[in-house]
Figure 1 (cartoon, one colour):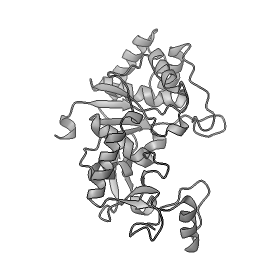
Figure 2 (figure 1 turned 90 degrees about the horizontal axis):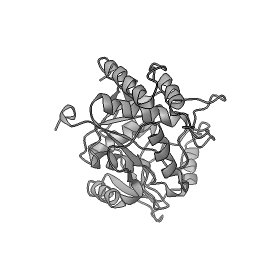
Figure 3 (figure 1 turned 120 degrees about the horizontal axis):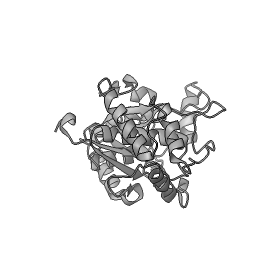
Figure 4 (figure 1 turned 90 degrees about the vertical axis):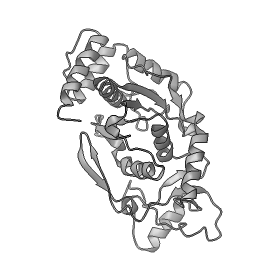
Length: 299
């Protein structure tokens, strides 16, 4: 079935590593508005696959914050921690296609491999995996599983509904990426692709900080025989220090004591009118209409 013929399904997928912050609400509001403007379904998925980073009570607080802003999932939220069988099945499918292989490298091994070639890592930059274990472990014990980026996938092209035409050479810019971590936990890239496929997600609306993941996810979708959603990456919110708001850099929890205040702030980031309605319901309805009108130029 073509993407245009599938019923619209959108999602908001927070990680319960802490409460939502102002930047989180921008992505949540945009994804909710996009679903409503398309007369589709909006789902909430709790992405708790990285269990060591999850905090007690965060899931309940996130759902409370969303509900206070009038953003309620159309279905009972699912949790990644309850979907490990799906991830294992996907990994086995990739293994049968020789698109997944065991890796025995540590971070130090990867650094050493590049240092031997005289290539030094820029500060804060991720190392491209050099493919050390692609042809075998050479006596090392297996620690993780990696996706063998197909050599035929020279450059991955896609269209972002806000950012426009995008492309990435995954082999050169990322290398063979992790599917299952050395600690036994499932990697984000595999989990999100499997979940989007299982929930029949047609449109992904998320923060621009996740745009760099798109090419890897498209390659996995193709390898697993899954349709690729349409993508829209929303503007980021920055703190006074110029850094993107995130839980990692101590962003303040979203204050929903007065939901309209929080929603108006998020709406302004999305270029929507900040005086829409006198109640949360009226504001959301007005913004949905404004978003629907914008779809004439943004599919």
